[in-house]
Image (cartoon, rainbow, N blue to C red; front, side, top):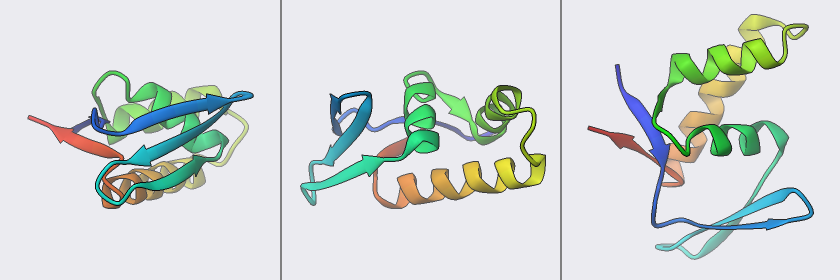
Length: 89
């Protein structure tokens, strides 16, 4: 299975528990909302999409499982498109 991790070229700044990222190529600043911030922290170590989904399902057991899985998959897709995370060989 494909594993993902933070893009080491991305700069991170934390202000009052909120995370902002700067992608070096476009020099855009991204604000991470709470769920994406949690994923960013998780991806300090390589994880598969399924592992990340399982961790968030454990963290939010009262949430609809299908919605959590869908939201995590969408966040991964968005972070990949913005080059904030990368695949690991």
